[in-house]
Length: 238
View (cartoon, rainbow, N blue to C red):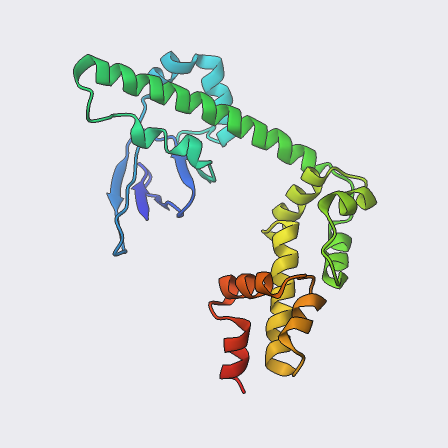
């Protein structure tokens, strides 16, 4: 967790897995690390006049708008792909020094800012398109709960609702926090877990009933989710 104190004494804690962005006149940064693992954290401070030199005033205005940083005290946390976020961590390699090192760092930072703005712009446009998608998400969720046997493909489901598979899956993720495939897999494994504890139905039958054609695939998925094999779970509770 990284806590940042703004000039107005607001305390902002960075959420793990998200990048924190903000605008401020004065910063006081402290780090509280409650872990036994090694942690690497990169913090980039850029004066606004330097940012304008990097990108130009119009691009900086667009970047602030896309990030929602319209005022000096604004901040936001955004899930940024590692391919973009980790660029900053590698912008000062130890084998370079002097002016070459500074030039390399500037080039990496510029690439990071460009990639970030492109990603945020794309994400906003895509989300706006998703929000305009006219199909019944709650109805889709209800239907998925009732599906038995082999899991249908996203294409088959999308055709029924008149949207593209990508839009349908993204809209479902926005509302329920997981992809359609993960939702179905987790739901079925929960059903299998209940069946193993509450019934005497053979494990192979349960696996086939929830759509696994090979019992070994079922055992692997079950152990990945619950930490024990189906056979061990049933044996422990008999």
